[in-house]
Image (tube, rainbow, N blue to C red):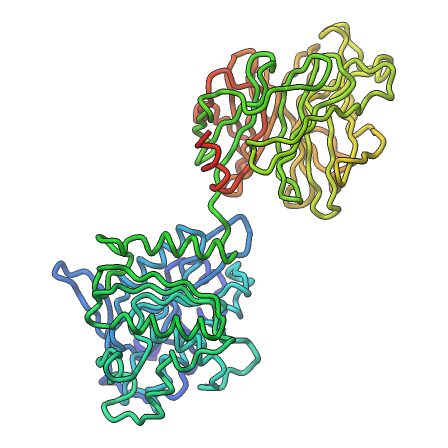
Length: 600
């Protein structure tokens, strides 16, 4: 086997999945086809790299073996949108760097997996029908993504295509000719993109508006009127054309702006969702842009993808906490990375407590519920038999505060402390839970220490915050337990809790697990915190790892531990919280919510 054949064979082995791990090697190109349709063997037609003045590879020409180069994003096992990227180059070469790799990396930055398509450049020397060669590659690329959606963690309903210049013509062709049977696809997998993005695209093949170089390369110098009309894609738009985002510069002298305008008008006529950005300047081939108003197009595209629910809005982290004794109410801080936290509203209160015996707002726990509202519960008093509750759409404007008498039925109740709330998506139900000491219960662990407090975790459930189930015991670990916080884990639910035992001293955080939110929960683990007193655990997953924040209350500062492959790592020296932060909770919120909070 000669070297060239061996290389091709190895590439085909990768594509066919014999070496499954190869797909996880990001940025490694693989052949698009096992057998290229309509190919003519021509050993003299050799792919050639294009170099800039510094010798850097910027593109290729004479492409005869199409490939896909994956740029995958990891999003905590969530399915991602994906885009086939079609570089431009007048159908005579491909600008693989500027309109391929750089674009793929930018797409990754907004949470979109990208696949750079090195498509065949139309040539009678290597194709039986050069008119359909690039379209064959585009259709197959979309089908390959759908075939391998599970392997690459892609959302099959969010497979799009983006093209620049002549690559924009190919992308618009894929968006209007997806039913054309240009090869035997051997199955019923759709080649229709779910959305398309066209950047200074060639759309028309009509004289006076087309880019002549692209037209000649694809259709030849003597194309028939029918062939010109067929590949003038503004004429091929119908109600099934995918939603489209268009970008063009008014002063584009290579590809007239009318290409985008006419395509947009055709989309509008057929009631296809579309957005178009026409910039004053930029010329042609500005890529992601480096000067002028056209540099904004990528940000506008991100907003469009969010608005059309193709990608999720970027998020930030919010920490709810109290200060002092909780008399002034709810405080909020924010973070971009989960490590450095800054107070909001100049560390002033967002909500003043109004209910309960002492009208305090200690231990505020905030979550986002299935109804889209933020629900909060808190400790209202040191000695009351109930807790506080309120809800909000934006964490700024809150509903009327309510007092929930969750322990009023127990005459021996001494307190209801550190309430938390967790939403069970499967049952569309909320569980509210807290720590309470009931005199005369669990006497085997009763101690004269800590004023005789001997807590256990109790709970109630609700679907509407109007009616509540009878209070029940949630967790009895055989020791004085407080400050539980429960979150959905990969296999069920994980409870972070504080062992409140003083003799022998514990005062540390542990974890327990359950298949169901309402338990039963497992035996508590060994401590996950170090040689200090910790309370008020709250946790969130960042980059697939749990980070647990807690109040080092005797040290008057906040700490944190991170879950690793070998256990729990103390990262207290890496987190920064506003001075005076006390027992709170962390949540992830859309950036739009943070933007509103920053204005307060």
